[in-house]
Image (cartoon, rainbow, N blue to C red; front, top):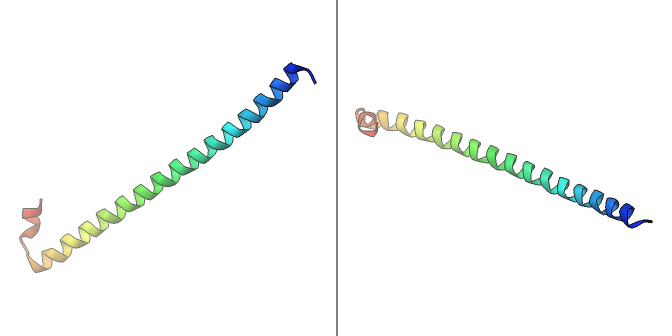
Length: 66
């Protein structure tokens, strides 16, 4: 095996390794985004339910809240 063929094989292994790391990073970023989006949506829904419940107890509280 010539040195050039050996280097080409090493670069092939390196690109495969870096590609697998890149895919893992993209998957992790996507999952983190989905988790943050869903938790934000849950917080908004809980906040609106909290205001609707308070509206029954204190009718003018939403005007103060806004």
